[in-house]
Image 1 (spheres, rainbow, N blue to C red):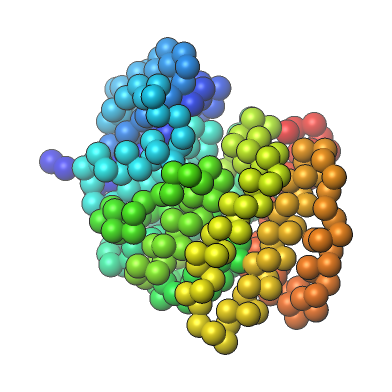
Image 2 (image 1 turned 90 degrees about the horizontal axis):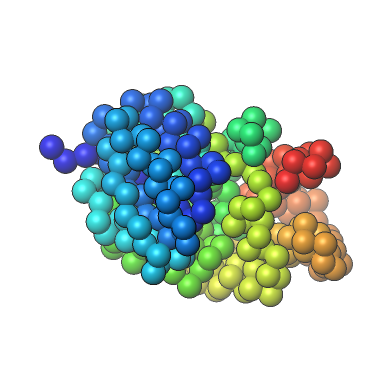
Length: 314
């Protein structure tokens, strides 16, 4: 019998958190779910040992891929090799929360035609302790893809473990751009929104782990590339917006890039580029600021990191 869900798990040096990630998945009693784990670690023995310890609880297929380092390439490969009609991503440091698989099954039942199904998430620290909500700027229910994309283009507000994606839709839009280490998922979600409808699940059943060695922390220190990758996504997807909304949404999106770059520079103890960020925000005006905060979920994203940083937890 074919599985109903294929979960792609790209791994690189993941033994520190991988056990907790797989344990949370196993706690969901994932009958009919296959886990495709691709490990590019230089010394894959430690990660493989962790993975194999779950052989009695998970339908887990381990593949060593030392020749394939980027998480995007491993994920695309996983989708190509998946057996199920729906796929999900689970990174080595993220978590499923109780009820996750039930929420995914319910989403398929409510909206089988949706190319993409997403939900709010939680932030956890390196010890797995809850440190805050990561909400979505969308109401639960079925949304027209282009309408949702008009908000999502301002800022990626989707946690990696949250999406459920129709495999045929992933393949139809070309999957992830493997040249993008930071914005590949954002670009993918926007392509999927252009391809079909999007279902917003009300349940919060995933957690995104904040820690100092994550890709979002280490990669964002390459400031010029960090900005260029965001600009590339905007160049690809802003032109698709209806003309009346395009100018307003572009102002919001450019301000978001400026703020993201300032925050990343501060985190890396580089010149903070505060002038560009403050200027972009001031140009939005009061109503624009309200729209900006709602679309970007900036407070949700920044406050847990700030608290952890002040406590020495990053």
